[in-house]
View 1 (spheres, rainbow, N blue to C red):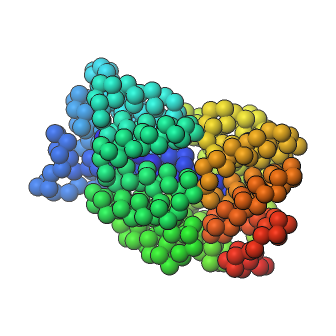
View 2: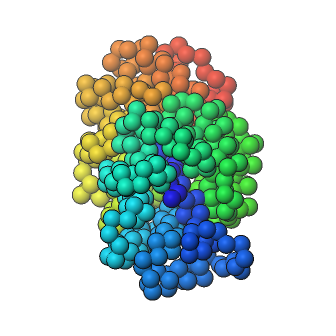
View 3: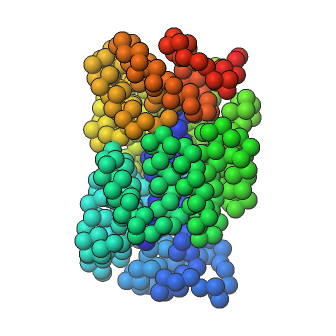
Length: 452
């Protein structure tokens, strides 16, 4: 069974692995499958809506047909990931439950529900189910994929690396290579990550949504390394495959902003969010509006973001990391008071999800409340993998400089400067100012990006 791994690039946490959309490519693998799960080329192609109607009827008639249950569920997970509409997750849950009511302890259904838990950010639950499925079905690729995803999102990186190697030993395919790409990126190897994502594209099954997803992810990597032309090519290719693909449209907007056309980028994001109020597009739009000094527009976008987060939370989705990042970076006054203070949100996030990104938001929230002891501890933790993420490195560098460790601060800011400036708009000037304070050379790309 296919897995899922995606990365929505939210404001400061460009590249946070909150696993939101490789379910997009996973979902499409079953489309066109016959009752045995094999692809049929003889049948006339149906439109997506016709296919979903047919699948819904088939599952309602025979919920024991696991192949159809998989196909319909993965379609719902795909749409939930690309549109941000949590009702798709509710439909996925209903579809899985209909099969579970008549089939007990089926590994395929366990993995399917595990993938739903991944979409809802219930990573510990997802891992537990996948481990149970793996006991029943040793070497099951879908179970291994879910285990890798869960362990990464729980910050258990050594275990995740071992599980990833088991997955690659079992299958070198699109989904496993995409995970390899992300793991390399986490460890600061953008060139290796790009190479693996290119290999994932070459290994792909050829379905439009799948190809659009991996091509968009390749565009994101190109953008992070400052290769704007090839990033643009990748986003264009993704949109040729699926013209409404919001991750690619959001990537195009970030690229426009990286080239200095902020107004056009905001306009593009407005078009995206008018159609699909995705978190990635809303967070980037808010950041760009704040970068432009339009506080009123940024607050309006923040209020819409809060409404989307509330809708997702009410549907059972855990929105911890997204909420925490916005709370410590954006205007927390627009968030529901029931969420708690930025520090409380960050503490809860880290407790449930102790990744380098969870450590980063807790470090920054602690720093903003003058708790330098916790800030330093979590800042150092956020740097353990050597990620080049400019915001993770800026937060850690600022904290470490303030506690007197200029050497570690310089190392962190040096890594931030290896990343293209498009990785952050909010902290661009902060990074350059801290680099100057630490007597670091400023790359031309960063110097030009901060010229007003």
